[in-house]
Image 1 (spheres, rainbow, N blue to C red):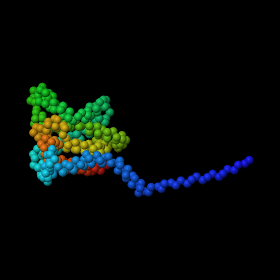
Image 2: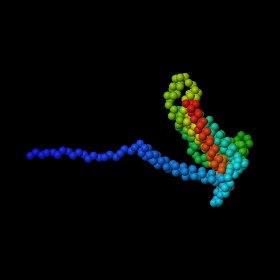
Image 3: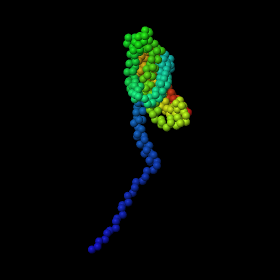
Image 4: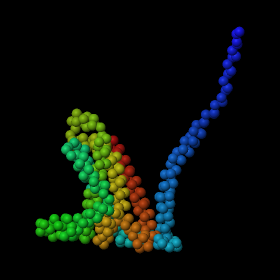
Length: 316
């Protein structure tokens, strides 16, 4: 008995969802981008934008940092800080410290990185020795060097000088010597870190570049001028930005080494802001100095970036 097979039923037609339009896709991507950046925006607003706005508001008042009352005084605080000799002294030392450390560390770190980039016995140990001061807390460095610069009997340097019959030197008691001492310690502690930064960029340069330059008859100096230096320009930009911003807001090293003295010789702008806002109860004046400081640092960074772009364009 034969059986007939029923023809197969057609599969039910599934209506596919309409494809999103290009505008919808862009909107979806835009929402996702905002969601990813939202935590960063919240942190920026809470920890930077709001405190900056509060500082500008308090800079226009006589707020003392403790009471809830603050009377509007206009731009009086801004004119006062330019007549304050201690503020001007702090500004002068901060600029000297920033320029001195930036120039000295850059001049020392690049040759040091070139040496550490060569192959020699114990290279890793030498690299670690130069990098070690960057691992130690800056406050600890200040305390240690305070003992090294101490007077005869306790200070290492003056004890060595005394062995030769020379008179001890008041390293931290004379204003000029104290400024030089702070800069020297900062250079000693920061050169190794920036040398490692330059070393990382040096190791990223392909060896074929130097081989091609050697085939063309370029000397070591010409290889540095036309190969190494142009490729180190981004590292120089990063290093100088870190040195400038770090130098302008320095506080811990001068404070632990000299306490800002003798007198106001090694007092920095950051120390002035802290002492005026907390110790002296002049939060309005400290806020005005903070606003001026913020604007000045911003302008310096913009100028530095513009100069760095010109350097990159020149060497490229």
